[in-house]
Length: 304
Image (cartoon, rainbow, N blue to C red; front, side, top):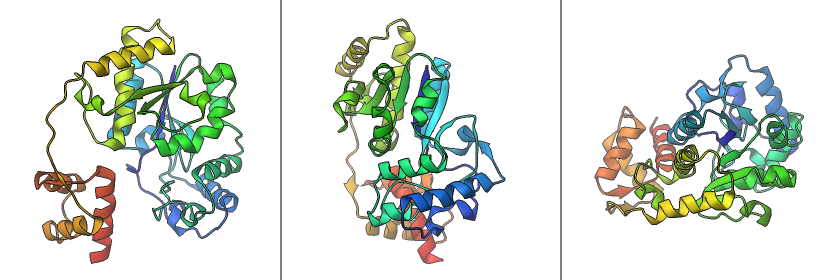
Protein backbone atom coordinates (compact mmCIF):
# COMPACT_ATOMS: atom_id res chain seq x y z
CA UNK A 1 0.00 0.00 0.00
CA UNK A 2 1.07 3.58 -0.64
CA UNK A 3 -0.21 7.08 0.19
CA UNK A 4 0.22 9.99 -2.21
CA UNK A 5 -0.60 13.52 -1.11
CA UNK A 6 0.31 17.06 -2.14
CA UNK A 7 3.22 19.19 -1.03
CA UNK A 8 2.40 22.30 0.98
CA UNK A 9 2.80 26.05 0.74
CA UNK A 10 4.39 25.92 4.19
CA UNK A 11 8.10 25.04 3.99
CA UNK A 12 9.96 24.32 7.22
CA UNK A 13 13.42 24.90 5.76
CA UNK A 14 15.25 27.82 4.18
CA UNK A 15 14.71 28.51 0.47
CA UNK A 16 17.72 29.51 -1.66
CA UNK A 17 17.28 32.45 -4.04
CA UNK A 18 17.87 30.22 -7.07
CA UNK A 19 14.80 28.16 -6.16
CA UNK A 20 12.28 30.97 -5.93
CA UNK A 21 10.11 30.73 -9.05
CA UNK A 22 9.28 34.45 -8.92
CA UNK A 23 12.88 35.22 -9.98
CA UNK A 24 12.54 33.43 -13.31
CA UNK A 25 11.44 35.23 -16.50
CA UNK A 26 11.34 32.30 -18.94
CA UNK A 27 8.20 32.32 -21.06
CA UNK A 28 7.75 28.67 -22.07
CA UNK A 29 7.08 25.75 -19.78
CA UNK A 30 9.94 23.69 -21.25
CA UNK A 31 12.55 26.44 -20.88
CA UNK A 32 11.38 27.29 -17.38
CA UNK A 33 11.43 23.62 -16.33
CA UNK A 34 14.92 22.99 -17.73
CA UNK A 35 16.38 25.95 -15.83
CA UNK A 36 14.45 25.07 -12.70
CA UNK A 37 15.61 21.44 -12.66
CA UNK A 38 19.22 22.47 -13.31
CA UNK A 39 19.08 24.68 -10.21
CA UNK A 40 17.35 21.98 -8.14
CA UNK A 41 20.17 19.57 -8.98
CA UNK A 42 22.78 22.19 -8.08
CA UNK A 43 21.29 22.84 -4.62
CA UNK A 44 23.57 21.84 -1.73
CA UNK A 45 21.29 22.02 1.31
CA UNK A 46 19.00 18.98 1.18
CA UNK A 47 16.38 17.62 3.58
CA UNK A 48 14.00 14.66 3.70
CA UNK A 49 10.83 15.70 1.86
CA UNK A 50 8.67 14.88 4.89
CA UNK A 51 10.73 17.42 6.87
CA UNK A 52 10.37 20.15 4.23
CA UNK A 53 6.57 20.33 4.16
CA UNK A 54 4.45 21.54 7.06
CA UNK A 55 0.84 22.31 7.89
CA UNK A 56 -2.32 20.40 8.85
CA UNK A 57 -2.76 18.67 5.48
CA UNK A 58 0.70 17.13 5.54
CA UNK A 59 0.30 16.16 9.20
CA UNK A 60 -2.97 14.32 8.44
CA UNK A 61 -1.43 12.45 5.51
CA UNK A 62 1.58 11.48 7.63
CA UNK A 63 -0.72 10.16 10.36
CA UNK A 64 -2.62 8.10 7.79
CA UNK A 65 0.64 6.62 6.46
CA UNK A 66 1.74 5.75 10.00
CA UNK A 67 -1.63 4.15 10.79
CA UNK A 68 -1.42 1.96 7.69
CA UNK A 69 2.34 1.40 8.04
CA UNK A 70 2.95 2.42 4.44
CA UNK A 71 5.18 4.81 2.49
CA UNK A 72 4.21 8.44 1.94
CA UNK A 73 4.86 10.25 -1.33
CA UNK A 74 4.30 13.90 -2.26
CA UNK A 75 3.11 15.37 -5.54
CA UNK A 76 5.29 18.48 -5.81
CA UNK A 77 4.94 21.14 -8.49
CA UNK A 78 8.68 21.73 -8.19
CA UNK A 79 10.10 18.26 -7.44
CA UNK A 80 7.68 15.87 -9.26
CA UNK A 81 6.51 12.79 -7.33
CA UNK A 82 8.88 12.34 -4.39
CA UNK A 83 9.27 9.77 -1.62
CA UNK A 84 8.87 11.25 1.85
CA UNK A 85 12.44 10.16 2.62
CA UNK A 86 13.89 11.60 -0.60
CA UNK A 87 16.43 14.39 -0.13
CA UNK A 88 15.21 17.67 -1.67
CA UNK A 89 16.07 21.36 -1.25
CA UNK A 90 13.79 24.07 0.05
CA UNK A 91 11.98 25.82 -2.81
CA UNK A 92 9.17 28.23 -3.60
CA UNK A 93 7.01 27.25 -6.58
CA UNK A 94 3.26 26.77 -6.87
CA UNK A 95 0.77 26.06 -9.65
CA UNK A 96 -1.62 28.76 -8.44
CA UNK A 97 -1.65 31.09 -11.46
CA UNK A 98 -2.49 34.10 -9.28
CA UNK A 99 0.69 33.72 -7.24
CA UNK A 100 4.06 35.32 -7.97
CA UNK A 101 5.54 31.92 -7.12
CA UNK A 102 3.88 30.24 -10.12
CA UNK A 103 5.97 29.55 -13.25
CA UNK A 104 5.73 32.54 -15.60
CA UNK A 105 3.89 30.57 -18.35
CA UNK A 106 1.14 29.68 -15.85
CA UNK A 107 0.84 33.30 -14.70
CA UNK A 108 0.59 34.42 -18.32
CA UNK A 109 -2.01 31.79 -19.16
CA UNK A 110 0.12 30.25 -21.92
CA UNK A 111 0.43 26.92 -20.06
CA UNK A 112 -1.86 24.87 -17.85
CA UNK A 113 -0.80 23.03 -14.68
CA UNK A 114 -0.85 19.79 -16.72
CA UNK A 115 1.47 21.41 -19.31
CA UNK A 116 3.81 22.41 -16.51
CA UNK A 117 3.73 18.91 -14.96
CA UNK A 118 4.63 17.38 -18.33
CA UNK A 119 7.48 19.86 -18.87
CA UNK A 120 8.79 19.39 -15.30
CA UNK A 121 8.92 15.60 -15.57
CA UNK A 122 10.48 15.81 -19.03
CA UNK A 123 13.25 18.00 -17.55
CA UNK A 124 13.79 15.41 -14.81
CA UNK A 125 13.93 12.66 -17.44
CA UNK A 126 10.69 11.06 -16.28
CA UNK A 127 7.80 9.87 -18.44
CA UNK A 128 5.16 8.88 -15.88
CA UNK A 129 6.39 9.00 -12.28
CA UNK A 130 3.19 7.33 -11.04
CA UNK A 131 3.79 4.26 -13.19
CA UNK A 132 7.37 4.03 -11.91
CA UNK A 133 6.29 4.24 -8.26
CA UNK A 134 3.46 1.74 -8.68
CA UNK A 135 5.90 -0.84 -10.03
CA UNK A 136 7.67 -0.68 -6.64
CA UNK A 137 4.57 -0.96 -4.44
CA UNK A 138 1.86 -3.60 -4.19
CA UNK A 139 -1.73 -3.11 -3.11
CA UNK A 140 -3.86 0.00 -3.02
CA UNK A 141 -2.58 3.49 -3.84
CA UNK A 142 -4.44 6.06 -1.73
CA UNK A 143 -4.31 9.48 -3.39
CA UNK A 144 -5.42 12.58 -1.47
CA UNK A 145 -4.90 15.71 -3.55
CA UNK A 146 -6.71 19.04 -3.86
CA UNK A 147 -8.64 19.37 -7.12
CA UNK A 148 -5.97 21.59 -8.73
CA UNK A 149 -3.32 18.92 -8.20
CA UNK A 150 -5.63 16.12 -9.33
CA UNK A 151 -6.21 17.92 -12.62
CA UNK A 152 -2.47 18.52 -12.97
CA UNK A 153 -1.58 14.81 -12.73
CA UNK A 154 -4.75 13.48 -14.41
CA UNK A 155 -2.97 12.76 -17.75
CA UNK A 156 -0.42 10.60 -15.88
CA UNK A 157 -3.14 8.67 -14.07
CA UNK A 158 -5.04 8.06 -17.29
CA UNK A 159 -2.03 6.49 -18.98
CA UNK A 160 -1.67 3.88 -16.24
CA UNK A 161 -2.70 0.36 -17.19
CA UNK A 162 -6.30 -0.56 -16.42
CA UNK A 163 -5.07 -2.89 -13.68
CA UNK A 164 -3.07 -0.12 -12.03
CA UNK A 165 -5.94 2.39 -12.28
CA UNK A 166 -8.11 -0.08 -10.37
CA UNK A 167 -5.58 0.06 -7.53
CA UNK A 168 -6.18 3.80 -7.12
CA UNK A 169 -8.38 5.22 -4.38
CA UNK A 170 -8.83 8.92 -5.09
CA UNK A 171 -9.96 10.31 -1.74
CA UNK A 172 -11.70 13.61 -2.48
CA UNK A 173 -14.17 16.14 -1.19
CA UNK A 174 -17.19 15.60 -3.43
CA UNK A 175 -16.71 14.31 -6.96
CA UNK A 176 -14.33 16.57 -8.87
CA UNK A 177 -14.57 16.80 -12.65
CA UNK A 178 -12.40 13.91 -13.82
CA UNK A 179 -12.31 11.49 -16.74
CA UNK A 180 -14.78 8.62 -16.27
CA UNK A 181 -11.91 6.12 -15.91
CA UNK A 182 -10.80 8.05 -12.82
CA UNK A 183 -14.26 8.89 -11.48
CA UNK A 184 -14.74 5.18 -11.00
CA UNK A 185 -11.89 5.23 -8.47
CA UNK A 186 -13.13 8.15 -6.36
CA UNK A 187 -13.88 7.74 -2.65
CA UNK A 188 -15.94 10.87 -2.09
CA UNK A 189 -16.40 12.71 1.19
CA UNK A 190 -18.36 15.93 1.65
CA UNK A 191 -18.85 18.74 4.17
CA UNK A 192 -20.13 16.23 6.75
CA UNK A 193 -16.51 15.20 7.30
CA UNK A 194 -16.22 17.87 10.00
CA UNK A 195 -19.21 16.33 11.77
CA UNK A 196 -17.95 12.73 11.84
CA UNK A 197 -17.29 11.31 15.27
CA UNK A 198 -13.55 10.95 15.68
CA UNK A 199 -12.64 12.79 12.47
CA UNK A 200 -10.33 15.79 12.54
CA UNK A 201 -11.91 19.18 12.01
CA UNK A 202 -10.20 21.82 9.93
CA UNK A 203 -10.35 24.11 6.94
CA UNK A 204 -11.04 23.28 3.31
CA UNK A 205 -7.31 23.38 2.49
CA UNK A 206 -6.71 20.19 4.49
CA UNK A 207 -10.05 18.49 3.77
CA UNK A 208 -8.78 15.83 1.33
CA UNK A 209 -6.03 14.75 3.71
CA UNK A 210 -8.35 14.72 6.73
CA UNK A 211 -10.73 12.55 4.68
CA UNK A 212 -7.77 10.30 3.87
CA UNK A 213 -7.00 9.92 7.58
CA UNK A 214 -10.61 8.93 8.27
CA UNK A 215 -10.61 6.47 5.36
CA UNK A 216 -7.37 4.96 6.68
CA UNK A 217 -9.11 4.29 10.00
CA UNK A 218 -11.86 2.41 8.14
CA UNK A 219 -9.31 0.39 6.16
CA UNK A 220 -7.60 -0.61 9.39
CA UNK A 221 -10.84 -2.13 10.64
CA UNK A 222 -11.28 -4.29 7.50
CA UNK A 223 -7.85 -4.74 5.88
CA UNK A 224 -9.01 -7.78 3.93
CA UNK A 225 -11.76 -5.84 2.11
CA UNK A 226 -10.35 -4.29 -1.08
CA UNK A 227 -13.55 -3.93 -3.13
CA UNK A 228 -14.10 -0.25 -3.91
CA UNK A 229 -17.91 -0.48 -3.83
CA UNK A 230 -17.75 -1.92 -0.33
CA UNK A 231 -15.32 0.80 0.71
CA UNK A 232 -17.63 3.50 -0.67
CA UNK A 233 -20.45 1.96 1.36
CA UNK A 234 -18.36 2.29 4.55
CA UNK A 235 -17.89 5.99 3.87
CA UNK A 236 -21.52 6.67 2.94
CA UNK A 237 -22.72 4.95 6.12
CA UNK A 238 -20.30 6.98 8.23
CA UNK A 239 -21.40 10.23 6.61
CA UNK A 240 -25.06 9.34 7.09
CA UNK A 241 -24.43 9.08 10.83
CA UNK A 242 -22.74 12.47 11.04
CA UNK A 243 -24.35 14.84 13.52
CA UNK A 244 -24.12 18.46 12.44
CA UNK A 245 -22.30 20.70 14.90
CA UNK A 246 -23.22 24.32 15.42
CA UNK A 247 -20.85 26.49 13.39
CA UNK A 248 -20.02 30.11 14.10
CA UNK A 249 -21.35 32.67 11.67
CA UNK A 250 -18.55 34.84 10.29
CA UNK A 251 -18.61 37.73 7.83
CA UNK A 252 -16.67 37.46 4.58
CA UNK A 253 -14.10 40.18 3.92
CA UNK A 254 -12.18 41.32 0.85
CA UNK A 255 -8.39 41.00 0.72
CA UNK A 256 -8.09 44.78 1.20
CA UNK A 257 -10.33 44.73 4.28
CA UNK A 258 -8.35 41.87 5.85
CA UNK A 259 -5.04 43.60 5.07
CA UNK A 260 -6.29 46.79 6.75
CA UNK A 261 -7.38 44.78 9.80
CA UNK A 262 -3.96 43.09 10.01
CA UNK A 263 -2.09 46.40 9.84
CA UNK A 264 -4.29 47.81 12.61
CA UNK A 265 -3.87 44.80 14.90
CA UNK A 266 -0.19 44.19 14.19
CA UNK A 267 1.40 47.43 12.91
CA UNK A 268 4.94 46.23 13.59
CA UNK A 269 4.46 42.78 12.00
CA UNK A 270 5.44 40.88 15.14
CA UNK A 271 2.56 38.46 15.68
CA UNK A 272 2.44 34.96 14.19
CA UNK A 273 0.01 34.38 11.33
CA UNK A 274 -1.81 31.69 13.30
CA UNK A 275 -2.40 34.06 16.24
CA UNK A 276 -3.70 36.80 13.97
CA UNK A 277 -6.03 34.38 12.18
CA UNK A 278 -7.53 33.25 15.49
CA UNK A 279 -8.03 36.90 16.43
CA UNK A 280 -9.70 37.64 13.10
CA UNK A 281 -12.11 34.74 13.47
CA UNK A 282 -12.83 35.64 17.09
CA UNK A 283 -13.75 39.11 15.81
CA UNK A 284 -16.41 37.50 13.61
CA UNK A 285 -14.64 37.59 10.24
CA UNK A 286 -14.07 34.65 7.87
CA UNK A 287 -10.85 33.79 6.04
CA UNK A 288 -9.27 30.52 4.92
CA UNK A 289 -5.83 29.80 6.42
CA UNK A 290 -3.75 29.85 3.24
CA UNK A 291 -5.46 32.99 1.95
CA UNK A 292 -4.90 34.75 5.27
CA UNK A 293 -1.19 33.86 5.25
CA UNK A 294 -0.81 35.27 1.73
CA UNK A 295 -2.55 38.54 2.66
CA UNK A 296 -0.54 38.87 5.87
CA UNK A 297 2.76 38.38 4.06
CA UNK A 298 1.84 40.96 1.40
CA UNK A 299 0.74 43.39 4.10
CA UNK A 300 4.11 43.14 5.83
CA UNK A 301 6.03 43.62 2.59
CA UNK A 302 4.00 46.73 1.78
CA UNK A 303 4.66 48.44 5.12
CA UNK A 304 8.45 47.89 5.12
